[in-house]
Image 1 (cartoon, helix red, strand yellow):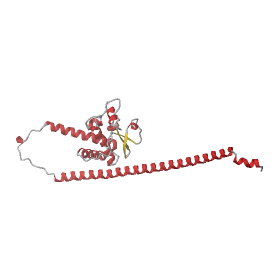
Image 2 (tube, rainbow, N blue to C red; image 1 turned 45 degrees about the horizontal axis):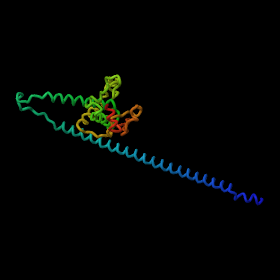
Image 3 (spheres, one colour; image 1 turned 90 degrees about the vertical axis):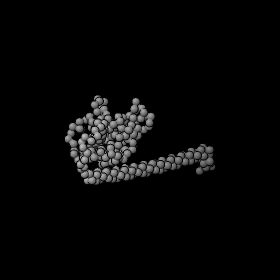
Image 4 (spheres, rainbow, N blue to C red; image 1 turned 90 degrees about the horizontal axis):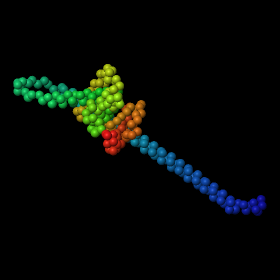
Length: 250
Protein backbone atom coordinates (compact mmCIF):
# COMPACT_ATOMS: atom_id res chain seq x y z
CA UNK A 1 0.00 0.00 0.00
CA UNK A 2 1.40 3.41 -0.98
CA UNK A 3 1.73 6.34 1.29
CA UNK A 4 -0.91 8.11 -0.76
CA UNK A 5 -3.41 5.31 -0.22
CA UNK A 6 -2.67 5.24 3.50
CA UNK A 7 -3.33 8.94 3.76
CA UNK A 8 -6.78 8.55 2.17
CA UNK A 9 -8.07 7.39 5.54
CA UNK A 10 -7.61 10.88 6.93
CA UNK A 11 -9.05 12.84 4.05
CA UNK A 12 -11.97 15.26 4.69
CA UNK A 13 -14.12 13.14 2.36
CA UNK A 14 -13.67 10.04 4.54
CA UNK A 15 -14.38 12.01 7.72
CA UNK A 16 -17.65 13.28 6.23
CA UNK A 17 -18.62 9.72 5.35
CA UNK A 18 -18.02 8.57 8.92
CA UNK A 19 -20.12 11.48 10.21
CA UNK A 20 -22.98 10.50 7.95
CA UNK A 21 -22.77 6.89 9.14
CA UNK A 22 -22.80 8.07 12.74
CA UNK A 23 -25.86 10.21 12.10
CA UNK A 24 -27.58 7.31 10.36
CA UNK A 25 -26.75 4.98 13.27
CA UNK A 26 -28.02 7.51 15.80
CA UNK A 27 -31.17 8.02 13.74
CA UNK A 28 -31.73 4.30 13.71
CA UNK A 29 -31.37 4.27 17.47
CA UNK A 30 -33.86 7.11 17.76
CA UNK A 31 -36.34 5.25 15.58
CA UNK A 32 -35.83 2.12 17.67
CA UNK A 33 -36.34 4.10 20.89
CA UNK A 34 -39.42 5.75 19.45
CA UNK A 35 -40.81 2.34 18.46
CA UNK A 36 -40.19 1.03 21.96
CA UNK A 37 -41.88 4.08 23.50
CA UNK A 38 -44.90 3.71 21.19
CA UNK A 39 -45.15 0.02 22.03
CA UNK A 40 -44.96 0.77 25.77
CA UNK A 41 -47.64 3.47 25.43
CA UNK A 42 -49.90 1.11 23.49
CA UNK A 43 -49.44 -1.51 26.20
CA UNK A 44 -50.30 0.99 28.93
CA UNK A 45 -53.43 2.14 27.05
CA UNK A 46 -54.45 -1.47 26.47
CA UNK A 47 -54.05 -2.27 30.17
CA UNK A 48 -56.01 0.84 31.15
CA UNK A 49 -58.81 -0.04 28.71
CA UNK A 50 -58.83 -3.56 30.09
CA UNK A 51 -59.06 -2.20 33.63
CA UNK A 52 -61.87 0.17 32.55
CA UNK A 53 -63.77 -2.70 30.94
CA UNK A 54 -63.26 -4.83 34.03
CA UNK A 55 -64.45 -1.94 36.23
CA UNK A 56 -67.57 -1.50 34.06
CA UNK A 57 -68.28 -5.22 34.29
CA UNK A 58 -67.89 -5.06 38.08
CA UNK A 59 -70.30 -2.11 38.27
CA UNK A 60 -72.85 -3.92 36.12
CA UNK A 61 -72.48 -7.07 38.23
CA UNK A 62 -72.91 -5.09 41.44
CA UNK A 63 -75.96 -3.26 40.05
CA UNK A 64 -77.44 -6.57 38.90
CA UNK A 65 -77.07 -8.03 42.37
CA UNK A 66 -78.66 -4.97 43.98
CA UNK A 67 -81.48 -4.99 41.47
CA UNK A 68 -82.28 -8.66 41.91
CA UNK A 69 -82.34 -8.11 45.68
CA UNK A 70 -84.67 -5.13 45.33
CA UNK A 71 -87.21 -7.15 43.36
CA UNK A 72 -86.89 -10.08 45.73
CA UNK A 73 -87.57 -7.78 48.68
CA UNK A 74 -90.48 -6.11 46.88
CA UNK A 75 -92.18 -9.41 46.01
CA UNK A 76 -91.66 -10.69 49.55
CA UNK A 77 -93.20 -7.49 50.91
CA UNK A 78 -96.21 -7.88 48.62
CA UNK A 79 -96.73 -11.48 49.67
CA UNK A 80 -96.57 -10.48 53.34
CA UNK A 81 -99.07 -7.69 52.80
CA UNK A 82 -101.45 -10.06 51.00
CA UNK A 83 -101.28 -12.58 53.85
CA UNK A 84 -101.94 -9.91 56.45
CA UNK A 85 -104.84 -8.42 54.53
CA UNK A 86 -108.21 -9.57 55.85
CA UNK A 87 -111.69 -8.68 54.67
CA UNK A 88 -113.24 -5.85 56.69
CA UNK A 89 -116.98 -5.64 57.17
CA UNK A 90 -118.42 -2.16 56.74
CA UNK A 91 -120.20 -0.95 59.81
CA UNK A 92 -121.22 2.27 58.13
CA UNK A 93 -124.50 2.76 56.38
CA UNK A 94 -124.31 3.27 52.63
CA UNK A 95 -125.91 6.70 52.95
CA UNK A 96 -123.12 7.84 55.28
CA UNK A 97 -120.33 7.11 52.79
CA UNK A 98 -118.63 10.00 51.03
CA UNK A 99 -119.38 10.18 47.31
CA UNK A 100 -116.55 8.87 45.12
CA UNK A 101 -114.47 11.58 43.49
CA UNK A 102 -114.44 10.89 39.70
CA UNK A 103 -110.92 12.33 39.57
CA UNK A 104 -109.69 9.33 41.55
CA UNK A 105 -111.06 7.00 38.90
CA UNK A 106 -109.25 9.01 36.24
CA UNK A 107 -105.98 8.84 38.17
CA UNK A 108 -106.37 5.09 38.63
CA UNK A 109 -107.09 4.63 34.92
CA UNK A 110 -104.06 6.69 33.91
CA UNK A 111 -101.81 4.79 36.29
CA UNK A 112 -103.19 1.51 34.95
CA UNK A 113 -102.51 2.49 31.34
CA UNK A 114 -99.02 3.72 32.19
CA UNK A 115 -98.25 0.40 33.88
CA UNK A 116 -99.62 -1.44 30.83
CA UNK A 117 -97.48 0.57 28.39
CA UNK A 118 -94.35 0.08 30.47
CA UNK A 119 -95.02 -3.65 30.75
CA UNK A 120 -95.48 -3.88 26.98
CA UNK A 121 -92.16 -2.14 26.35
CA UNK A 122 -90.36 -4.41 28.82
CA UNK A 123 -91.95 -7.50 27.31
CA UNK A 124 -91.49 -6.79 23.60
CA UNK A 125 -88.10 -5.11 23.85
CA UNK A 126 -86.31 -7.22 26.46
CA UNK A 127 -88.35 -10.21 27.65
CA UNK A 128 -85.43 -12.61 27.10
CA UNK A 129 -82.96 -10.37 28.95
CA UNK A 130 -81.89 -10.70 32.57
CA UNK A 131 -83.61 -8.45 35.10
CA UNK A 132 -81.02 -5.70 34.71
CA UNK A 133 -81.53 -5.70 30.94
CA UNK A 134 -85.29 -5.33 31.30
CA UNK A 135 -84.91 -2.56 33.87
CA UNK A 136 -82.46 -0.75 31.58
CA UNK A 137 -85.08 -0.61 28.81
CA UNK A 138 -87.66 0.69 31.29
CA UNK A 139 -85.09 3.21 32.52
CA UNK A 140 -84.71 4.65 29.02
CA UNK A 141 -88.47 5.15 28.83
CA UNK A 142 -88.54 6.93 32.19
CA UNK A 143 -85.58 9.11 31.14
CA UNK A 144 -87.49 10.12 28.03
CA UNK A 145 -90.55 10.98 30.08
CA UNK A 146 -88.37 13.36 32.14
CA UNK A 147 -86.79 14.89 29.02
CA UNK A 148 -88.20 17.97 27.32
CA UNK A 149 -87.63 16.35 23.93
CA UNK A 150 -90.18 13.57 24.35
CA UNK A 151 -93.79 13.17 25.53
CA UNK A 152 -94.33 13.48 29.29
CA UNK A 153 -96.14 10.18 29.77
CA UNK A 154 -94.98 6.58 29.51
CA UNK A 155 -97.59 5.69 26.91
CA UNK A 156 -96.76 8.84 24.95
CA UNK A 157 -93.09 7.85 24.87
CA UNK A 158 -93.67 4.19 24.04
CA UNK A 159 -96.16 4.85 21.24
CA UNK A 160 -94.53 7.98 19.84
CA UNK A 161 -94.66 7.85 16.05
CA UNK A 162 -96.47 4.52 15.93
CA UNK A 163 -99.12 5.97 13.62
CA UNK A 164 -96.77 8.06 11.47
CA UNK A 165 -95.35 7.07 8.12
CA UNK A 166 -91.92 8.29 9.29
CA UNK A 167 -91.72 5.41 11.74
CA UNK A 168 -92.08 4.57 15.41
CA UNK A 169 -89.65 5.02 18.27
CA UNK A 170 -90.13 1.46 19.53
CA UNK A 171 -90.41 -1.03 16.68
CA UNK A 172 -92.85 -3.39 18.40
CA UNK A 173 -95.56 -0.70 18.25
CA UNK A 174 -95.67 -0.72 14.46
CA UNK A 175 -94.13 -3.95 13.11
CA UNK A 176 -96.92 -6.38 13.99
CA UNK A 177 -95.21 -7.87 17.05
CA UNK A 178 -98.23 -7.13 19.21
CA UNK A 179 -100.44 -9.31 16.99
CA UNK A 180 -98.71 -12.44 18.24
CA UNK A 181 -99.87 -14.40 21.28
CA UNK A 182 -98.22 -13.45 24.56
CA UNK A 183 -95.81 -15.78 26.32
CA UNK A 184 -97.57 -15.74 29.67
CA UNK A 185 -94.49 -16.45 31.80
CA UNK A 186 -92.58 -13.51 30.31
CA UNK A 187 -95.65 -11.28 30.30
CA UNK A 188 -96.25 -11.92 34.00
CA UNK A 189 -92.65 -10.93 34.73
CA UNK A 190 -93.02 -7.78 32.65
CA UNK A 191 -96.22 -6.80 34.45
CA UNK A 192 -94.68 -7.40 37.87
CA UNK A 193 -91.59 -5.41 36.96
CA UNK A 194 -93.60 -2.49 35.58
CA UNK A 195 -95.69 -2.43 38.76
CA UNK A 196 -92.60 -2.54 40.94
CA UNK A 197 -90.82 0.20 38.97
CA UNK A 198 -93.82 2.54 39.20
CA UNK A 199 -93.89 1.79 42.92
CA UNK A 200 -90.30 3.04 43.19
CA UNK A 201 -88.27 -0.17 42.92
CA UNK A 202 -85.76 1.06 40.41
CA UNK A 203 -82.06 1.60 39.73
CA UNK A 204 -80.79 3.98 36.98
CA UNK A 205 -78.77 1.21 35.36
CA UNK A 206 -78.77 2.76 31.87
CA UNK A 207 -76.86 5.76 33.26
CA UNK A 208 -79.23 8.45 31.98
CA UNK A 209 -79.61 6.87 28.54
CA UNK A 210 -82.39 8.01 26.22
CA UNK A 211 -81.55 5.64 23.36
CA UNK A 212 -80.55 2.04 22.87
CA UNK A 213 -80.21 -0.51 20.12
CA UNK A 214 -79.50 -4.22 19.82
CA UNK A 215 -75.92 -5.24 19.15
CA UNK A 216 -76.83 -6.76 15.78
CA UNK A 217 -77.95 -3.46 14.23
CA UNK A 218 -76.06 -0.26 13.41
CA UNK A 219 -78.44 2.75 13.52
CA UNK A 220 -77.39 5.97 11.82
CA UNK A 221 -77.86 8.04 14.99
CA UNK A 222 -75.54 6.06 17.26
CA UNK A 223 -72.24 7.84 16.31
CA UNK A 224 -73.79 11.20 17.26
CA UNK A 225 -74.62 10.14 20.83
CA UNK A 226 -72.54 9.35 23.90
CA UNK A 227 -72.38 5.66 24.93
CA UNK A 228 -73.38 5.02 28.54
CA UNK A 229 -73.54 1.25 28.99
CA UNK A 230 -73.75 -2.14 27.33
CA UNK A 231 -76.19 -4.43 29.08
CA UNK A 232 -77.10 -7.80 27.63
CA UNK A 233 -77.65 -7.44 23.88
CA UNK A 234 -78.29 -3.68 24.04
CA UNK A 235 -76.01 -0.66 23.73
CA UNK A 236 -77.24 2.48 25.55
CA UNK A 237 -76.64 6.15 24.72
CA UNK A 238 -77.45 9.66 25.92
CA UNK A 239 -77.32 13.10 24.34
CA UNK A 240 -73.69 14.33 24.42
CA UNK A 241 -74.48 17.86 25.62
CA UNK A 242 -77.25 20.24 26.62
CA UNK A 243 -76.76 22.13 23.35
CA UNK A 244 -77.26 18.89 21.39
CA UNK A 245 -80.34 18.14 23.49
CA UNK A 246 -81.76 21.61 22.82
CA UNK A 247 -81.18 21.20 19.09
CA UNK A 248 -82.89 17.81 19.14
CA UNK A 249 -85.95 19.38 20.72
CA UNK A 250 -86.39 21.94 17.96
